[in-house]
Image (cartoon, rainbow over all chains, first blue to last red; front, top):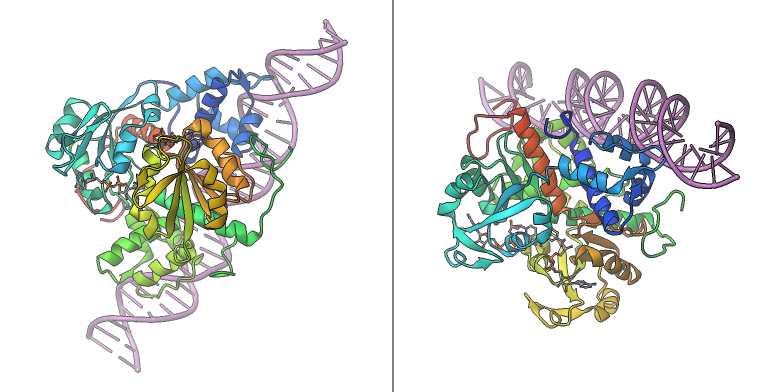
Length: 232
Length: 232
DNA sequence: ACTAATTAGTGAATATTTTCACAATTCAAA
DNA sequence: TTTGAATTGTGAAAATATTCACTAATTAGT
Ligand SMILES: NC(=O)c1ccc[n+]([C@@H]2O[C@H](COP(=O)([O-])OP(=O)(O)OC[C@H]3O[C@@H](n4cnc5c(N)ncnc54)[C@H](O)[C@@H]3O)[C@@H](O)[C@H]2O)c1
Ligand SMILES: NC(=O)c1ccc[n+]([C@@H]2O[C@H](COP(=O)([O-])OP(=O)(O)OC[C@H]3O[C@@H](n4cnc5c(N)ncnc54)[C@H](O)[C@@H]3O)[C@@H](O)[C@H]2O)c1
């Protein structure tokens, strides 16, 4: 029982929303806001207050009746629940544009992911500097995962190479994969795979734009932080 | 009625899965496979065959009873349904590591998204080449959206600037936004916003790894393309 | 202290999504 | 042509997820 002792089988959709609460709570903390209620969180994020309360009930964060949730407590509880406080070691395979961008991305480190290696099969890329790291050859990958206790592998290679890179990471003992390639990766059930799905997201957006246009949506909109639909 | 005339109110989860069917069907087409059944698709993607059939019923693609779906027909129907055949004009705001990676990413173009501009507020970045494009100043953004009929804006600026960039894109007439920043963007209901959520995805992965370890998952796994759990 | 207002927490009610299960259909092969 | 195996498409059932609505608690103000 690291944190709550009852985090078993939480639906993925809830975990996904928890990350939204976290980032929003962090913004509020940055603004010096001390308390936030379930209805405020819900309105800001387009959810009902009941959903927010049910979701936060999974996390060990006690709201206070007439105030809501204390922002710093909420941040800490979510950070802890999501494992940010413990931290992960991650490596990136594929030192292309996206792989380099991720390796250099400070937000990841700030959310508990220490990128401790970048690997590439292309000899011309090996030796290149990426921030504080040097691109290493694939031959060193297995040993690194073992020696540096790497938890997570980021797959940033072309689709054609993605499954074989995944296989290599898996047999080397990786514990989870972020797949940035387009294709579906198959992995054993003890190695969770999460897809980046950036291109899929764009396709979803295209579809949303089209159906929005078909409906003839319009709205009087005041710029900036305005409530969603009901109420304000 | 652009394509089917009945694409109204399809759940986002279905659209999301349709993109998976598309990418997998494209792989199959590349391999020269001619037919695919709902059970094969489902097994490969970790879904039940009934879900696949129900999903594909939303798209105008007729399966054939004893064969399944014809791969090329399936690809075309999904491409058409998702608007790839019509195509979109997109711009990227923020010529940082991620913005440049996206602008250079061929898969996007191949999926109907023509990146027709990259913008940045930093004078030192303006004028830089990104592939075939030149980074332009923010002052040209509004006119570009109008003149080049830009549909989609990609927000690739730091979180602190994301909402104000979104506001600028919205008042300039953008039709949809891909938000790569961490924060939640508020927009009018006629401008759909889809989040990239790369950092959130990593957090979800961390959580999955932890709960997987807590469950003590193990599995005898044969590398490569192996069935999921039931059957093979 | 009392009162009015606010809000977390939660069981019950809805709504949505997924899965089951089977009739109808098609194909291949005998 | 007939038979048998395979597979779609789809109502109905089951499982999940969300929202409602109410209780109990807490605070601020008087
Ligand atoms: N660039 C983007 O914005 C973007 C967006 C969404 C998805 N993706 C996906 O992310 C992946 C990487 O994209 P990118 O733009 O960085 O591509 P890239 O071509 O710039 O980089 C790919 C890198 O992988 C390396 N590589 C190839 N095969 C390898 C192997 N077997 N082992 C190790 N390294 C190998 C190459 O040498 C290269 O450095 C691709 O699958 C792409 O579809 C990219
Ligand atoms: N790099 C990654 O892998 C990654 C992953 C996930 C999310 N993100 C997010 O994507 C966004 C961009 O990331 P990045 O790594 O490219 O950052 P970056 O710092 O490399 O680039 C940001 C760019 O935005 C420009 N910019 C800043 N304010 C602007 C404004 N008001 N108008 C126009 N341009 C402006 C800057 O000049 C800079 O060129 C960030 O919000 C980041 O959190 C990045």
